[in-house]
Image (tube, one colour):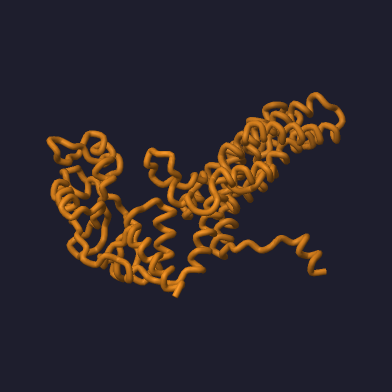
Length: 384
């Protein structure tokens, strides 16, 4: 009996109660506002429905699984409109409702897959166009504009606003890629375990539509690999490998001062701290190369960087460190295990991590080289 239940009932997903509440609240607000907009648009007209049932299924995707490829704006808009066009056309050409229903669903799926806008609720849209009765049939192709397009646009607008206000990124953006070095070498995170090509080959062999973004799947698998390493490693912390005699700069230090410090000490990065020794950013060689212009061998702020600063809302550039520094900056604590630091460095393509105490004050800095030494020490101790 237990084995039978396992076949029927899926495993519970590790989703918090906060996420469940957010999903349910979003659907409530989305359908309510979409219905109100529909009522205002059509009034008390019996000829035009204010809200159609497939929007309920769309709400499940947009508010419960907004990261799904099936829930993205192109999927809901194109999927619903294309399916409505297919449904109305088939209903006009085929008299038998059951044959028409089967054809409408079949053609709608094929069209959505061809246009990369697969959206499961759109199948219900096609079915509604065929089996919706005389009120729907009398609308003809007007059914595509209202209620299908109108409801879809309204629900999508609510989903964009609600998801972003509640802490989700929607539309679901692809994960940020580490900075490219302009060579054929893969990013650090891709040099261990499987390759991206391996995953693509497996997905090709699997040959099924997965309700997860391909990049999200790769991120999950790579993080699993790194967590596996962390579980097997011994727990040296960042305090045991960090550099403690750190040279830093202030946000208002001149660019030439920061550059001279990096050159004289052969550093590739400098933490940026305020008057309270709190870390507010980091300036690296890459920042000097990408964000500064060079005049007579001295770094200055060029026109392009000035434009960037203006659009970012920062203060007017004056040739100081704050004009090119990376902020906010990722940091770790002295007690952070080095395997956690490895994950941060690898996933985000970083070379340095400032180490801060509980008050966010600078305590040290670790580099990729420091982590390598720590790993070698760890291996040597395990060998003995």
